[in-house]
Length: 454
Image (tube, rainbow, N blue to C red):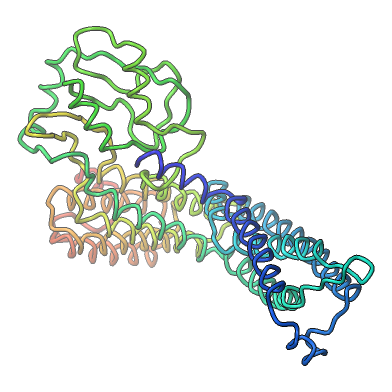
């Protein structure tokens, strides 16, 4: 992600950027229509007096009423947005607030009302009575009336949108859609050419190099890395760059950010140039951090499973969308660490693995769903879906391990034979999808069987 892309993501995540653009457009629109008014033939305005026949005082009164009402509605809109943010934060997770701030509908609605206010102000200052030279921009005044009518519809649309956007299913699906979009861009990562033959001996290779640590110049979360610039950096200085922290990880100022295969100590210019490749801020973003998208949905599930809320349905929805994300990841290459450029090893990256992403999705939910048969069977069903998307033996073994973990959880927490039978049936289906013979694993859900698996 380059600097321009990072700046754009920050702007589109703010509540002020789109409204400022719309206010600017409204002012330009008002000035343009007024200019057109000065050049138009006045005859049509006289022909249609009931449509364009307002005098100076009447025009001022109408535009003043529209302006005052629009700025009031804009304040109400902002208040509703803040209340919605507060409710979403307390009911789901504070990490979804950024999604609400990025919501384009909220930004456009707020900008629309403030834009009408600005439009009316610009038109108001051009109206002149007889004692002042008698100029009434009839077309601009009429268009202000039209904007006010449209504003009523926009307000109704906004109320509907807010009511829909704070529903659990919409919050979860929005987070999942953003994560799936990021997955499509991130995996496989485009950090030079893949170097499988080097990767096989990467740990031996790393231990043979004398590494010089490059300190971080600021504290925060790594939001993204300009991968193309990282390769150019390695080529320019003739070094191998090893990432010490991956995207989404927290880095402390003056701690190692990356290491270089150089013999001399790095100078300040080199340190500054390398730090410029990284984007470090106070919070995480999804654009280059798919793990953060998964974390948001897991947090919602954990809040739903808490004793204070006890909303199993919402937690089940979270598992469904986590399955959709992992199914998208199942046939993508994400573990490769070494990248080459021109046949030479340039970067040793640090990123997520399929095992880590699956564990991040299911481990905490499984631990908080002890005794909840609906949750345990839904996770098994999700694993069954993911297994159908990959033929990779290693990844299927990871999924098999999580089947075993769920059986172990059920063995400790599910007591009724009826409930244990439901778990057993789900386990059988998951094992069958993984091309495993259920008889080889034992499904009595006894402590002895679990110990045999491990």
